[in-house]
Length: 369
Image 1 (spheres, rainbow, N blue to C red):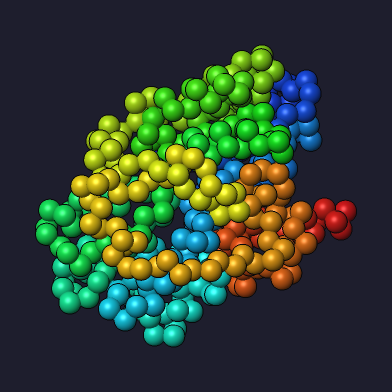
Image 2 (cartoon, rainbow, N blue to C red):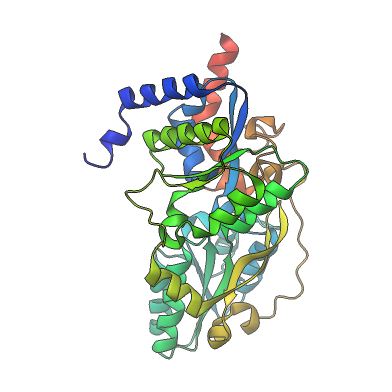
């Protein structure tokens, strides 16, 4: 199958691993930014194929995981209102807030519905004119254009019963935040291929230059990942710090101009709180003044919210690459996908979920010798 089999070719993967081994002269630590990349690494055993001197740590690129607890609680407060049809993608329904998740709220009678597109939520508003339809807009630059399209379409159709709880976050400020942390150990990045498909690569050049870190924009198949790791190692060994794009079949330097224009029209940049990480300046989107009437936070009073994070959960440290899921004493015991304590175990892109699905059995094999 073109564009799939060749990127899962075992011989090509082994050649890349051997090339990485040949270039290494000292230990390096590289962060893969996206949760999808983490899943590829753990699922295909890439981390186990690499030399011990090369450490991969996991980044903040899971949209569900980094949605702040305060945003989840705000969603619950809105979804609890009897006049509201609250809509979201399915993976947000099991993310724990301070007092349960949206599925539990639905079980208690709230009208919470899964949609497969924000445009479905717009259509719900059109067919339910006596109800308030709210869409929970989360994610990075990748999902933001579709949500912006939904807001613009609602505006053009004159719908007054549609609004969005905007909780978008942006990748480059998060990478800068990680590099500025005293705990930082990241020396190179595997950049977010899907985000760069929308936004291009220009935003990453100042990061590479300011902090002296190479950034290789990669895809999500095993050969994509290994090629990105090899090129990152080559830059580290050569002492260069540039933004490069092995994922050229998808990513262009300028990105998707139509999507970027839409984002500029509907959203404006704001400070945003990240779950387990804290507030990062200019790291999120909110609605631009022309579309502020579709802001669910303005439409519904959610000021009285008291957030309470699960004690013992270290998902914030995992998202910053400081610790790994297996470092958590609750991993696989008190915290499982069936009963998650933190978002990194809930989300399909979460690092803890990846380790639980693919990695925990391999750890048992290692322990057994």
